[in-house]
Each structure stands twice: as structure tokens, then as C-alpha cells.
Length: 147
Image 1 (cartoon, rainbow, N blue to C red):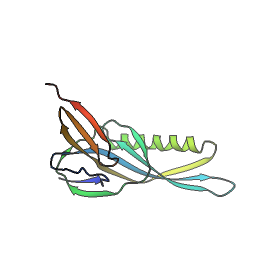
Image 2 (spheres, one colour):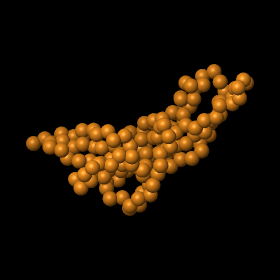
Image 3 (cartoon, helix red, strand yellow):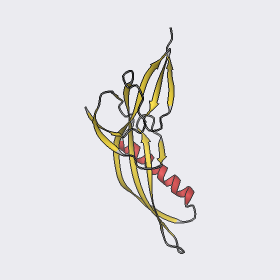
Image 4 (cartoon, rainbow, N blue to C red):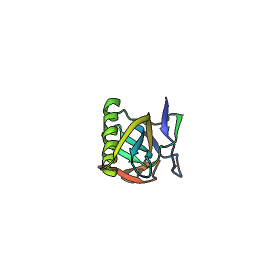
């Protein structure tokens, strides 16, 4: 199955013993303008990532590079709708703008959006499973196996 994913920045050294897991996310690219009487207007970009399973919105540092690939792993289905994710992204963008530019007048608009997947690699180590994040390289222990 062809999917669009965020291009990995970290790849495990030994990919033979790992399983690919594709986690659903929405990416929103907002542009904003803050009106100022002195020194001119401030124009900027704001990227919001919405987790497709738990429905949380996060600010991203940059808009990630996306790529279309043929999936070889497990694809998780989103648990929230696109409308819910867009509402969460707008809430996050407004909260950021209100906090940063509290006493100034600003406007913003949605420049682009994309539904994509974030790649994790799962690997069994001893009596537990570990997930490796393809963006940060972080490893997380996710489950103990009961004997």
C-alpha cells in the first residue's frame, strides 16, 4: 500500500529485526501577520502537528520533508476525524499567537495541510519491546512480556 510519510532522520543500524509501524498525523502550515504601528508588520509561519490517535496538537520547529513510499509495515488508523484535527490545530495556533502577541492585533490563515504517517521501528529486546522514533532517534520501552 502506498502512503505518504515524514522522511526519517534516524534509521536503525540493523533493520532485519525491526518492524515498521506507521503512526497517523496531520500537518498544518499556518501563516500569520501581526500588525504594528512602529517598525512594520511581523510575518511568520507556524507548523502544527496533530496526533491522529490521541488527538493532541504540537508545535513543530519546521515543516518536515514528506515522501511517498510503498509501506512494508503496520499502518495504524486515525482515531479522530480530519475536522477534529483541524479544530485542534487552530486552537494550538491561536493559543501560541495569543501568548506571543498578547497586546497586538494579528491574523492568520491555513496555508496548507497534509495527512501523513510518522515512522516508528519496533524491536524485541529480551523481555520487552522498544520503539525507535524515526525523527528524534529516541528509544522508548513500550511493553513488558509476562512469562
